[in-house]
Picture 1: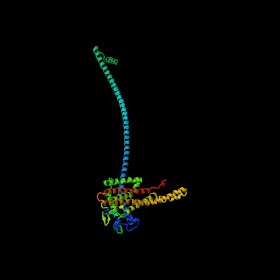
Picture 2: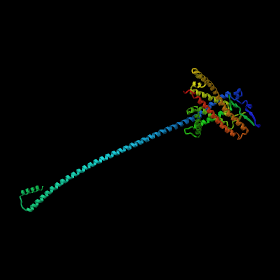
Picture 3: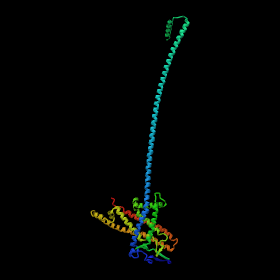
Picture 4: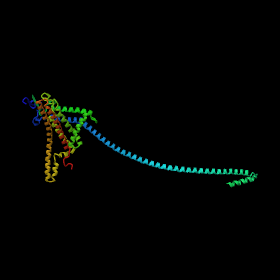
Amino acid sequence: MSLINTVYAAETAPHTTAESTDGGVLATLGINSTLFAFQLVNFAIVIAVLWFMILKPLTKKMSERQKMIDDSIDNAKKIETNLGMSERKYQEKIDQAKVDANKFIEKAQQEALLVAEATKEKTKKEIEQLVETARKNIKTERDESINELKEHAADLIIAAAEKILSAKIDVDKDDKSIEEAVKSLK
Amino acid sequence: MELHIPTLAPETIFHLGKFPVTNTIVNVWLAIAVFIIVGLIIRNRVNLKPGKIQNFMEFFLEKLLVYFDQVTGDRKKTLSFLPLVGSVFFFILLSNWLGLLPGTGSIHIGEAPLLRPANADLNMTLAMAVSVVVISHIVGLVTVGVFTHIGKFVQLGGLIKSFSKGPVAIFTAVINLAVGFIEIISEFAKVLSLSLRLFGNIFAGEVLITVIASILAIVLPAPFMLLELLVGLVQASVFTMLTLVYLTVMSSAPHGEHS
């Protein structure tokens, strides 16, 4: 330290220090009313610059982002709730549709059974009618056949009698005997 | 080799009319210029999707807000105090760190160094301390009401009421009145302690680096400069936290007010 020539600025440059004209403890500590006021103004400027140019925009943007995140979370929750509700409604509708479908199927089956029964009954009736008609026709045809057969048989009998008797018979008697023969056939 | 140990008072560089401009004021202007540049950058780039610079600053600010929340206990309160405490923190931090710029204490105009840390000027620290304490009282007056706030210091109401309650109550009221006066004194002590602590630490750091640099100007000051970085951060934190405590205490109703 002997090489170092320690020079206290207070001694070497008393004219440069701001408080040199004041006296007392405050002056010793370097406090000067003008400088104090100057620094107060400077501090106010610092606060204004820092707040309005840096901190306020940043905090504002951070708040906006926080609000956006909160809103997004709320919306996501709402969407999730709505989705759950929609899924429940969808499931309810599906269940209802299944129930309705089962009812329709059951009803259709019942209707089909009824239709089948009715058709069956109708067919049965038609068949019976056909059978009846056929029976009637058969009876009619049989009667006609019997009548024809009788007529043919009468003719044959007459022809045969004429041939066998080979006798000449009066026409009126002939007709009468024929009719009697026919009646007896009936 | 001459050793220019900084004086307690800042050195005048030039005059603006009648007003002296000291090297600490130059340092404050430098800090303001840095803040304006950063502010302009932020204004142009601030976005909901932050870029690198914004992301870094928001990270830093968010960490700071979490610390502040521990004192205030309420984010809303923290944000209402942020204009003052945030500004105090960043200003002290930057001005302390600016003191480590090459040229501080070594570039001279005449016999006075051009740059000197702003907080190595008691006028600056005193201005900040006075501002903080005065603002804390304004906050107290606004938030808890004029009479409640004054009642924290001058407890005459309690003394008057105590006359009807007996000697013990009177004794307690007299003690409370005395405590109130001590509280008034402590408000002045706040100003002194805030200003002298910050000034003392930063000024001591300046003196230390000056002395170390005079022994060996290369390499040797580096560890001390790193230490000064830490001191700058710690002192900014201490001043800010104390400011926040004062604001929180002043904005809270005194004990017994709630009931």
